[in-house]
Image 1 (spheres, rainbow, N blue to C red):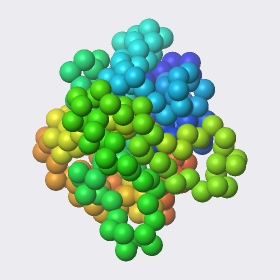
Image 2: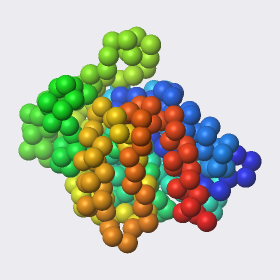
Image 3: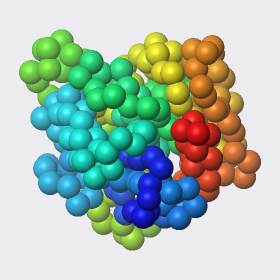
Length: 261
């Protein structure tokens, strides 16, 4: 933590990941170059957090966990502006939280290579990136869960992540699936209307992102954000879905600093 912080950022990892996977570059950079206090919790069921892997009792419990984290951060750094963000599915989680009625008061949001879900139509066409798909979904489990009002199959491992074996061998704490409940927590349910309600946010994605089409993500953000929102929406040259993490502290730190000045 910086000796005299100017702002707070709570930042969430991507799908199946945990805060120990290169995200430390963000925390160190924001601390040393921008005097921003950064918290990078592992979601429940991920990394060093307790709970069944890749699961949660329900989606709201994950959002309640964010409230707990916000209260802790504010107790350590009272009266500072506080921002929430995430990478990939962590950005989707942040967007869901931003529209949740029980959320805490947040000053702004940061989205890095954001997962805005199929409803945003920001994924590649299958022919555009060699047919690569990071995840596969058992749609019927979600349908049954929805039809039952959440009673059935909430803990079903309905979303599988296609991490390369080499990555899994070197990172045994990666979770290779999300249950229906966890997926509902991190998957924006109405990304266009959710984004339109934000007053302050920054969004960055690499021009070589393998998971999401950067041009579609940028266009979606521009088309669906409020005209008067204080926002920065940029494509970053020579960055892919994961390498953008290495430069993210400069992107987010500069934007947060401009907001709080």
